[in-house]
Amino acid sequence: MDINTTKLLKQGTIKMSKNLIELRNLTKRYNDMTAVDSINLTIKENEFVTLLGPSGCGKTTTLRMIGGFEDPDEGEILFEGKLLNNVPAYKRNVNTVFQRYALFTHMNVYENVAFGLRVKKVSNSEIDRRVKRMLKMVDLEGFEKRNVDSLSGGQQQRVAIARALVNEPKVLLLDEPLGALDLKLRKEMQIELLDMQRSVGITFIYVTHDQEEALTMSDTVVVMNKGVIQQIGTPQDIYNEPINRFVADFIGESNIIEGVMLEDYKVSFDGLVLDCVDKGFAPNEPVDIVIRPEDIRIVVNPDEGMIKGTVTSVVFKGVHYEMIIESDTREYLVQRTMMFPEGSVVGMNVQPADIQVMKRGDMPCSVEEEEE
Image (cartoon, rainbow, N blue to C red; front, side):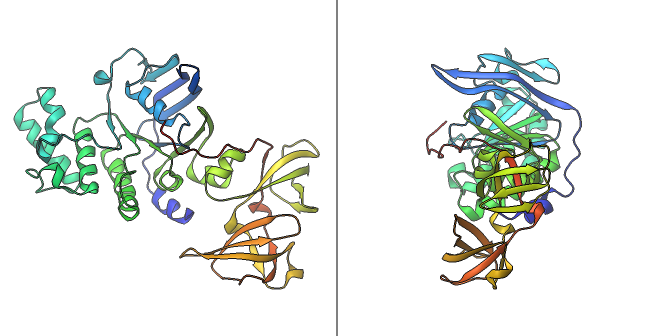
């Protein structure tokens, strides 16, 4: 995971201001299944918030309740301090971009973007001004008369975003809008979406199961599982300081190890006693330890390493090699730019700041590939 890219993208992000949306004990059930379980979340004006988690975690249901497409069974949705629960979707100052875009194939690009304004009976001159401004913003000038079926996936997505933004909502909801695009275009559109959000200066609430999208674009990431919020934080916090085993396992790749927190700043695992930077645990408390693959240093002389192991697998990943190194007690996943061939006996070292200690938790269920 390229965290440096995330840091560069986050430079110059719009400063946060007042609270815009508040979810209070929000709950949604379908028969005997609880899709969203009493969540609390505050979203600020001009913030780019991503709801992140596996299929079935409740993120899309949460988005649909904010948009007015689903009614909560319990809890409150507040918009600028006013209760939104009983306000119909068309009266909420939000617009939604769906994964399948839902463009009108019998209309050209111009009429697709103008549709919402025509419903509101906006004057033709104002429609023309706002549609042309939006098409310029999404780099589709000159496409006004094109049929939407003739456009590429990325161009169709831009039309869908322009159609949503032309109504000047305070909030744009995006439900996995990049899911149908190929990898290269998806990465390009991540940057474009972030630029658009900065340009228009409105709140984006984005749903995805793609951790890289979340880390690349967001001011705030909300990690969900089984209808419950697991952690809320900046991309850097979520990646570098996961709060529990589920977050550590879902965000990026991790070595997750059971250990014991002997005392403040001192942790033990696999017969080792190592310095760390964590505190606030009970003496001898069982804990889970996260060591990211890119944080393990390899030394050629095994005797110079804290841990000795044998390289059992090497895979080239483009920017680094991914290696499995087997010690006497476990396999470690290691990512380095230098390759050590299979069969090499090496030493491994890790710095105190790269040992993340968490409260002991259950291992998450496997991510199921089914619709929410």
